[in-house]
Amino acid sequence: MTLAYLTTPLIGLVGTAVVGHMGDAALIGGLAAGAIILDIVFNTFNFLRSGTTGLVAQAFGRDHPKEEKAVLLRALAISLVIGGAFALLGPLVSMIGGSFMAAEERVLKAMDTYVRIRLLGAPFALANYSILGYVLGRGEGRLGLLLQAILNGSNVALAILFGLVLGWGVAGVAWGTVGGELIGLLVAIAILARRFGNSAWPSRSHIFEPASLLSMMALNRDIMIRSFVLLAAFALFTRQGAQLGTLTLATNSVLMNFFFVGGYFLDGLASAIEQLAGRAVGAGSERAFRKAISITFVWGYVLAGIATSIFLAFGTSLVAMMTTAEEVRSEAMSYVPWAAFTVMSGVLAWEMDGIFIGATWSRDMRNMMILSFVAYCIALFLLAPTYGNYGLWAALHVFLWTRGFSLLSRLPVRARNAFS
Image (spheres, rainbow, N blue to C red):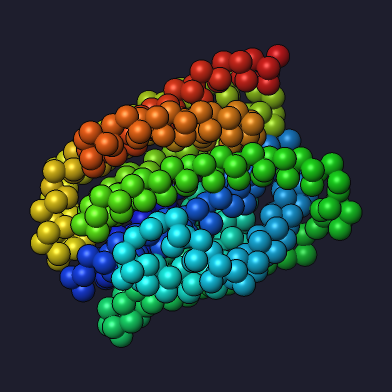
């Protein structure tokens, strides 16, 4: 799953590179602003992936295959309803996002184009979340890798074709993503339809059983709030960068790719512990739960150290690959270490997220995320006015540290209650 998730940030890297080679900082900033708005929309509903993973993993641990399918069908139904609504509300989402970003007119125009097109593919994107959650809950990493490689590979190829070869620019990058999501969904449906064949399906009453639906909605509500607050933090980071000028906005959008690549690098580890923790809780095995935690702690910091070292060693070259704008390249050099070390600052948060998602301890995730956001805002208020963009990056590190350690403080109590 690490390999699978590493294909995802290629979308952002290629999109930034396609637009960056046009040599216009406003277009880079518009793409970054649009991506943040869409991250808020899509990742707010990331519970369709993470919640499904936890519930399927626990059903797997209880050896209940019909419930696994029922969880998938519930998630797909929710994803299609929500996705259809956002496809219709694209202009409104873009208008609200533009008001929040408060950037210059050319940045907002590029952002509007990107957001409106991308939201047409919302039903496909959210349905893919649900299917990936089902696959990960069953621990099928190879299938997850295949689906992500097809989805993201199609996305990258189409973005290059539409954005660079055909010269559609920002619109081409957006249409490439929509096309990739549709291709990925069709392939996933074909694979699952063949696998399920004539096997037993849950009844409609089982799928829409009130108690199961209420449990899923409570879990999804908490994860949704947690995801919204997380993306709000990144949106605030982008907005504050925009207030420091278009050059700072473009610089930070390039450097945040280091953080996102590092994050997806560690998401494979988080997915593994989601599966292992969920199975252990479903089977009532404290020994398996503790073993999963100890293994992932060691490997988490090993992988984070590798990623940080790569970014420090090749950061200058990576920035040069993503943009031809000389002023952006020059400005970014001062902040490469700040971006590189976000992986080390965030590794504990990724590990804790995996444990709490798999165990479906969503209320703690919600509460600790809100606490971390408050700490982030305080750091931003104290540091940014004096230290400018350096203060902005320092506040981001405070946010990551608080996320990890606040969840770690809750782990002993939750584990004791779960296995008592």
